[in-house]
Image (tube, rainbow, N blue to C red; front, side, top):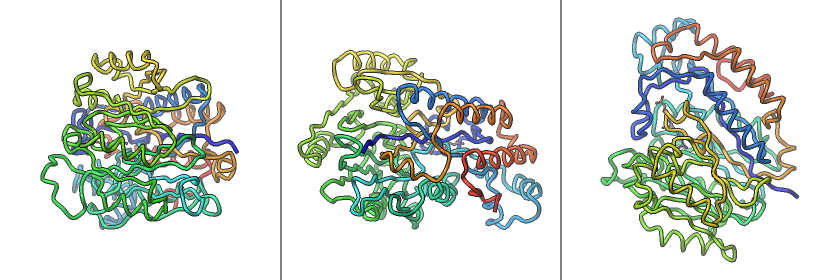
Length: 444
Ligand SMILES: N=C(N)NCCC[C@H](NC(=O)CCC(=O)O)C(=O)O
């Protein structure tokens, strides 16, 4: 049976904006208050997906969430019509409205942790939506994410869904952004690497920025997914990386099959980690591409998002391909590094640069924008929605974005009830296009 990596890219939401909500995320803070272009965001995302498809990859999409999230307002005691609640909330706290309007759901690497069927005890693919407890604007995502995933991957003999972890920031979980899977091929048993920022019950005095993921959360997910103990590893992210702005491990490391591409400051003891991964992989030889700080200072890695690239095995190419943000080409150290990397004769042979600036300004590169799922043909056939892109669906989504989305959005526009109406009618139509049913709170 043929197996492949399917990338499910998040579609940018109609209220995409720059409110600077994520403490510890350098780009989000830097671009606070800028005018966003949600329509361009969708089109940049579809362009990236289209590029991967042209390389022979299977590409899916995940929808944005309903924003403004009126259910959160209702849960906080606001009453009245939708417009009355929005107006009252804006009067009470523009910051609250910014939080319930964030389109952070586009970063689907944070949607869930996934253990594919070849790795689990019951031979099913397991999904746990990330609770994203560290940031208020993201903590409201998990329930709807779970609902969407259950429609897309119906629970049964192939797919198994778990509830997001409870326990607040003590059990903070950021999903696949802190989880790597190594394997010989996608359908073979793999090794899972969980990367956390701190222990749940200790004060991490070495962190100036939040360590969003806790070790206990990672271990809980591994237990729930019942992956093999000798093929499940846990490692702490280097505090220096978090303090430099790597709020998720995928800002300083990326993997594909038997290749681990990472910055030398991503982990405290990279030699030990290499040995542990190799031991868990057994006969399958790992290739470690460790980037020295002398070639790429960690500040350049964080600024350019070199490691927040997608590392893929494109069916139409020999050797692996990095899908990089254009910022990497504009940063001298990372451009020089990538040039020598692809000509070195190593496992990474191609570098493609794509413009995802609307997302990058909020700290989301190509890797943040996608949720990877290793799937067999039978898994794809068992999906419950119309989420796999072909040319027709791509064209439909482009037309949909052009019809509904604004090309200019300032933070103050979030108070506009007309924007709310536009957002809900766009999302209502999207659930029909993607055959998702009534997954949003405003549809229930
Ligand atoms: N690295 C991965 N996998 N994902 C990137 C997530 C970026 C996101 N930015 C934001 O949420 C900013 C939103 C704002 O400021 O409006 C975050 O910090 O959680």
